[in-house]
Length: 128
Image (cartoon, rainbow, N blue to C red):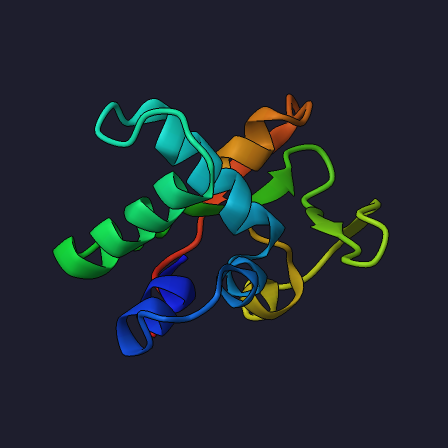
């Protein structure tokens, strides 16, 4: 979203096709939900979406960084990982020094959508 708003601030005449491309599928979904949930913008088509983007460009915005967690199996001490290509899961055993480089980090929303009864949530510390 931030990339799209910055693009719009630099070039207010950017066509919707370029803005949509910059937003990506996830950004368009967010924009639709934001537009429908905020009574200032109401329901509408493309013009309302552009008004939302201009509103963010003019009034500012905050990029939310969700808390991330590692999932460590309490029984095996292995960490849950996920292949990016097909989203399948696997386990890996690593020492504490290698965790941040090798283990998938999950948001609370992702964890809530999984069955993680035997996993301990370990907060990912802010990366410097």
